[in-house]
Length: 108
Length: 114
Image (cartoon, rainbow over all chains, first blue to last red; front, side):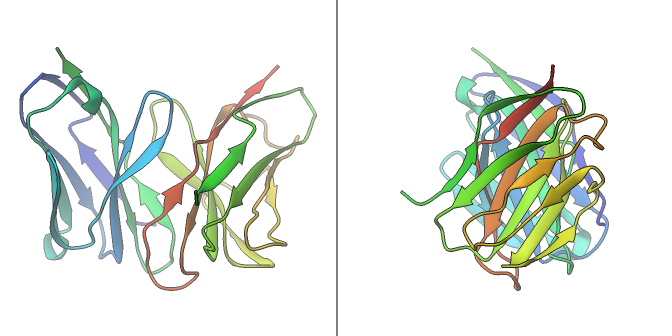
């Protein structure tokens, strides 16, 4: 399957700070999703972004498919942004491969 | 409301016992998936099904079995052959069995060994 690497593995932010999470992948993809996993384990869809740029409130994402990476931007972070952020990609086999995640802690 | 329902939320298994995790969706999605998550790690694919009465092994299928008799249901059985079943199990679905669509997830089942 496609290899997915996320960086950094851990991120500690002061409330109000901005941050960038990165996702590198090893092959061309047909689907790329960013998820937020909350402390109760719920996996929330943030973006479906195989290419291009999307924004949703304080979050935005950019995928550069030709260079095999995606970025997730968090602006004006809040304590509710804490959790684990996963990047997942799908190749031609319809199987989603996940990265190991970035654990974000936002301190008040 | 449409969504994916997993039950139970918590499940305990005795040694040598098979247990079945339920996943039901009312989204009219064709494809369904089962993932396993261990602490501090990402999700790994166990089994997936793109249409009724058909399913394929994922990356870690050993010790697990599934069935897909109805479009809305995709139960996962953790058999006694799975020697390390303690994990968080997530079910997902996507609209099309072919073509690339975003996956939507249930709230998960936590399985522990007694």
